[in-house]
Image 1 (cartoon, rainbow, N blue to C red):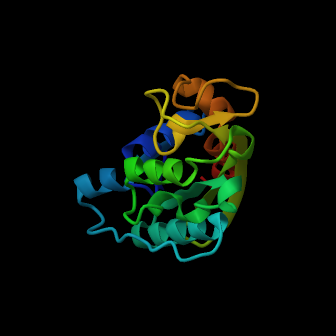
Image 2: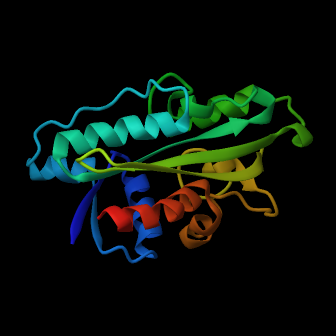
Length: 205
């Protein structure tokens, strides 16, 4: 079984990606960065600054670094929320929109505050995910997924993470945080991107 490492320290994301890829029956052993840190086999795994101007560029940066450091096949994603009324922001800055990387609560509150006087018809938004796989010998693949919808004025639901509690997909009345995990995976930007990446992982594993 080929070991594949996901370039994330977010336990929610590791579980979500593992769930999505499990349906593809790839025969891989997927682990996150923190799983490798617990083992202590690869020393200190450095964080990678997301300095590219695109989701695909940032996903590749992280996967390249992790594959080079560990000698394992690495997969990564960069994803974010693009809000029409904010001219497509926070976009690639979604995880650090409030100034601190990974503070989901603060990021969500800031977006809601910025839209406080924005009517429903102007609260359109979409999620984007670029998923990348990089092998230790430098083979690279990237696939993107997108989910369109709109933003509520208050949080709803206890599932998911990030901006899920305020995002309603087109054709739905529930936020993605009100959906069961399998329902969300079936339509989500991350689900679409990683299902598209799965054949490439199978080819390269």
